[in-house]
Length: 110
Ligand SMILES: CC(C)(COP(=O)(O)OP(=O)(O)OC[C@H]1O[C@@H](n2cnc3c(N)ncnc32)[C@H](O)[C@@H]1OP(=O)(O)O)[C@@H](O)C(=O)NCCC(=O)NCCS
Image (tube, rainbow, N blue to C red; front, side, top):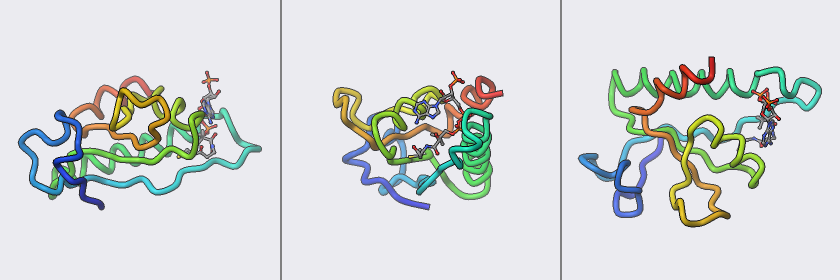
């Protein structure tokens, strides 16, 4: 679990949240290159997102946050609906997805 300084959070993340905003940090995600493009990365990400929904039911978790490894990894995350903290910065690698958005992402990932 992690906490996001509400003053630095996008409005949709900080609105009506405690400070810091409770979130699930996805530290590292990688798939062995020999098994790439088989859907394993998407399945692992979907598992983490479903875990965030469960955590939010039991305690509080407003979002999943991830720091992409590089711009290519950012593009991969954006395919899942994840947003940059600063949408105006094309180099931004800090990303988030609201728990409220996860159902739509999981439906699209199936
Ligand atoms: C990003 C990563 C986890 C994807 O895992 P994966 O199991 O290959 O992904 P999936 O099979 O679920 O998705 C494959 C799709 O994503 C695309 N894709 C895979 N890696 C990508 C990348 N680094 N950037 C952009 N798109 C990527 C593939 O082209 C494929 O597209 P298609 O469905 O149109 O053919 C894997 O490439 C990886 O381990 N990368 C290195 C570490 C990393 O960048 N981690 C991200 C966390 S910060």
